[in-house]
Every structure is written in structure tokens, then in C-alpha cells.
Image (cartoon, rainbow, N blue to C red; front, side, top):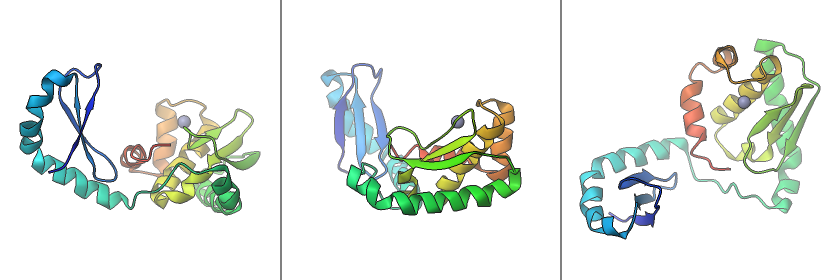
Length: 175
Ligand SMILES: [Zn+2]
């Protein structure tokens, strides 16, 4: 089995991870641990295969880098798609909002301002729609609850009963 080894001094032990594209990464605290790696990988082969199967279910790898030109090209379609999703999903909540916009800033899938403006990352058009729905429900819920407390999550759950699973899956897409 092929794998990559990375050194991370903050890591306390030998760690294994499977990336969304199926690559296996072994993290070691220092080079002293390298001799442990082949057996460690061999011992975890079954687990690695299981992770890879899960990744495949998430779907194909997408390029989330997106240049300024990419944003320009997809901005209109992204706004249309997300506006439709907001209206569709807000039927359940009926919360009022002031504006919907799309952005290309990295690191955030969406946001909701205190004056009720919803903003979404245009890269949402590149990931599976069930994850988009989670992000949309999340931001709509913020229209009523500007925090991540229990009442907020109860609102999200109304639209997305399996939101925990989707939230987890969304983490595989690094913005
Ligand atoms: Zn939030």
C-alpha cells in the first residue's frame, strides 16, 4: 500500500489519515518513529480500505481553489442556485432576510449578518447538494439564533435531521 509520511512535532504519536482523494498520510512526531510506519500501515489496512469506501460515497474530488476568473464565471449561476435553495428551505422556517449574496472568500461556506443578510461561498456549487442544503439551513437558522447553542442546532435539525453526518462530510472539503 502506498502512503506519504509527514513529520509534525506537535503530534504525540504515529497517526493515520485518509484524504478525500484516497491518499494515505502517516504523521509521525519525528524521524525516530519512521521505523514503526510500515507495520503501522499494514496493521491498519482494513481500516484504510473502509475509509476509502466512505470517501468514494462522498463523490468526486473537486477543485476548491477557484481563481478570480473562476468566480466570475460561476458567480451568476451560484447566486441563482443558492437563492433558489434559500427560498426552498426557508419555506419550513419562514424567517425574514434582507439580502442573499455570493462571495469567493476562502475559509467560509456561508455567513449571516445581524441585519439578516445571507452570504454564501460560490464554491458551494462544486460540492454535493446535500451538503449545500446543510450550509443553507445553517445560515437560515442563524437568522433566528445568532449563536451555535442548543436552540440553534434544534432549528437546523428541523430541516436536516442528519445534520451531524453532513457537517462531518463537509469537513472533507477544505476551503
Ligand atoms: Zn454558524
